[in-house]
Image 1: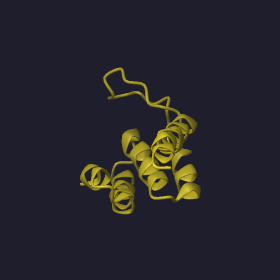
Image 2 (image 1 turned 90 degrees about the horizontal axis):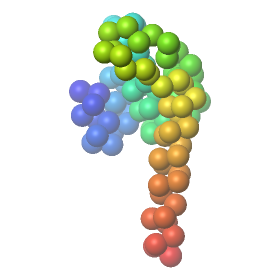
Image 3 (image 1 turned 180 degrees about the vertical axis):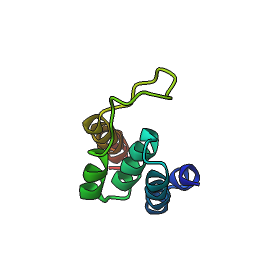
Length: 94
């Protein structure tokens, strides 16, 4: 459900679902990353930062060799996407 809310751009509801998932499954790091990303996209930057600091990027167990991003990388990637990708669209509209 969190995935669906996120891609419907209902980031607040996605954050709520991912927060519930992190409480039920505290060892699943992806839920923590998605929670932080959802908070960030919802404009809840302080909460997103706090949530991102809970991600254990060194825990790759059960991730089929996939290494998770570190919390600063998650937030920096979101910022770059939101700010830098939006800049060309804003210039075209002028």
